[in-house]
Image (cartoon, one colour):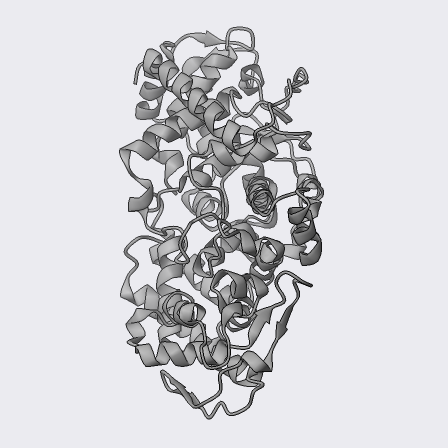
Length: 531
C-alpha cells in the first residue's frame, strides 16, 4: 500500500469516527490540554508494580515464551518477558498466573477501578440513575465495556483476563440488553471469581445470577407456563450442546426446573426465589429425573445444574471450545478427549484443563495458528506501544473512546447469546485487515483518541544516539513483535516509509508520522495479528 493510500484511509477513518463519536457521545469533546512530553526511557509496555530496566538490544523470547504471553495472556511486551524470565521461565510464570492474587498488579489497574467506580453501585442505585437520567442503562453497560478493555490492556494478571474473555463468551450475556445493566458488573465478577476454579460452581452461579435471569427471560416464568428461553440456552450453549440430542420435551422440563428464580424488577431490583412461580411436576432431562413436587424447587435446580456440569457431553463441549480458543480452529480429537477426561476426573477444574493445554505438544507447536480478533489486536498493540491512558475527564477521553477504535463491537456487545466467534474465519476478511491497518497507524502515531492519554514519541523509540534504519526496524520488531527482523519485515518497513535501510537514524530525524507508518507496517503483519 502506498503512502498516499495510507493517508487517504486515515482521513476516511477519521471522518467515520467523528460521525460515530457524535452518535455515542453527543457532547462536543473538550479541547485536550497540551500533551506532557514523554520521558525517553527504555520502558516498554503498560505501567507495572515494580520498575524493570531493559537493555539494548532487547533480549528475544523463545517461541514458547512468546506463545504463552500472546495466547494464554493478552500479549507480549518486553517487560512481561523480563518478568517471565525473573520467575524462571514460561512454566513458572504460568503457574504464578494461575494464582492471580500472587501476581503484583499494576498501579494502573487500581486506577481503572476508580475511573469506573459507579459500576459497583447497587442494582437499585443503577436503576435510579437510569430513571433520573444520571446515567442511562446503555451508558452503564458501555462503561463496563470500557472497564474490561482497560483491564485487558493494563492488568499484569493477563491469563485471568484471557480466561475472562473465554468464559464470558461461553456464558455470554449481551450488553446490548439494557435490562442487564444493574447486574452486569457483578456477573463479570462472577466469571472472574471462578476463572481458575470449577466449571460446576461457575455454571450454577452464572445460571442463577440475576443478569442471566433478565437476559434469558427466566424472570418472566410463571407457574404452569415457564419461559423456555433459559432452559433451552442452558442446554444448547452453556452445557451439553446439541450433540447431546435432547428433545423439546426436555427443553420444557429444563425450563420448569429453573422457574421460580426471578427479579423484583421495577421495585427493589433484588433477585429472589418465588415458589408461586415454580412449575411443579415430574421432569426428565438426559438422565436427570425428579418428581419436582415441591413449590420450592431450588434443591432440584441446584442438583440439575450439577448434573449438567458433570455430564460427559458438557465435558466434550467445553473441551472442544477451550481447545479452539487456545490452540487452533481444528484441535485434534486426542487433545479434546484429554481435556474432557481431565475435566471429569478433576471435578470440572478449569485450572487442570489449562495446565493440560499449556503442556500439550499440540499447543506448543501451534504458534501462528490463531488470528487475533480486532479487540485482542488493539489490546496487544496498546501494550507494546506503551499507550498510557489517564483518568478520563469527559467525552472523548481515551478510556471512553478506545472502545470505538479497535473496529469490533464493544466488549460484551455480541448481540446473540452464543458469544463472539472463536474461529479465525470471522476475523480474517480483507476488510478487517484493511481496517486494522488504519487502527495500527492511529495507535502508533497517537492520532486518535487524543484526550487523556500519552503516546510515546518516535524519538523515544530510538535506543542509541544513532543507528541504521535497518537496526531501528530490528529494535522495533523485538519491542513490538518479540522477534528479530527478517528480510520480509525490513522490506515492508522500507516500502511503507520510503526510508533506505542504510540511512542513519537519530532522535532528531525520526518524526512521529514515520513512526505511525512503521506501526502500520509492522503491526499489520501476521507476526502481530496472529498468535
